[in-house]
Length: 439
Image 1 (cartoon, rainbow, N blue to C red):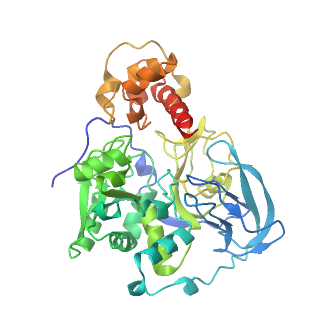
Image 2 (image 1 turned 90 degrees about the vertical axis):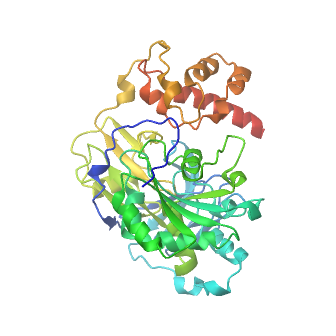
Image 3 (image 1 turned 180 degrees about the vertical axis):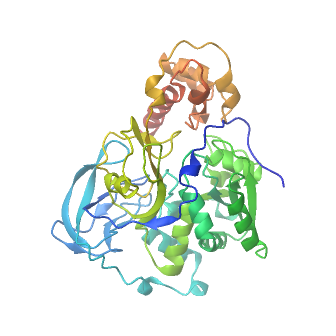
């Protein structure tokens, strides 16, 4: 069996065994639930409820404020307690709808949303996905209905389901593929059928042989869909690297995947598409991995959006010892959090509690010119040089050296023997350049 990959990358400790074999468990929130109005790329959603209103699960509580935005629905029944600024997993505050959970869990009748799929046009399916508030659930949070309407619609010939899940410790996508493979396949078929020339690829790293086996068995009689085994390597699941490994097509920083004829959807996102189109359900829950060497019972939980991180950690048995660092997401690209009183959002893939903060323990020193960062960089640039340009404010040289090709994966910082904060330094300059471009 051919194993596909890209140049560069690293092999961090996996850590997946802690939660890999734990079935997805439903969690019911105990306290209030909080819905940041900005949990997606684009304009924040606009509230359509006010303080004192009673809502039920599945009810629209904030609507998209433009084309690049996303609807938000309540995940519980209860009363709108406040519309105020609250802390988010990104570390900032955002205007949020706070709902006092009444524990009745009254739910919308989704059957009224179900349509005859055979009678739907392409625009109808995209409208359903838009109404459901679906965004990329791998972390980026890009509104899915926007991604499915590229300018070059006729050129799209490949839809990739990202089942790589290359981040260490994370197993939520793996459990989805193991426990609900038919939803993945049917969700992919829905998206493939939106484009006249498209075929589907389910891309999975080869450290998940059982998922590969299940998917291959289920798609063997579906001519437009195939399964591609990818080499286990970080960042195999990054969009550009995934596209290259799966199709051999190169995407740079000035291109969108659609420019290469490709659309990529995370495994959890593709299931949400299935549930919206076939079952009439909006996006009100997601699977979150709660893990790390400080967690008593690591596992995977299907969680109503808005649930607090504190509650989820308690659901996993709490801490066995005080962690030095808690991360929202994985250890390579996740963000450290300083409070557990933050809500699960559409982009929350994991909560990771670690006994040691390896980054804080390391003391950066001068570059020793070893070239390790260059050898592992999947963007094929020179991180050591880019970091020097960034530190000295040499923006033009930064751009000339391909600074915007960095995907901020963290590989360079991971292998640097001098413990330089390469990714952080480069990312700061990229952010400034992008912000200036928007102005």
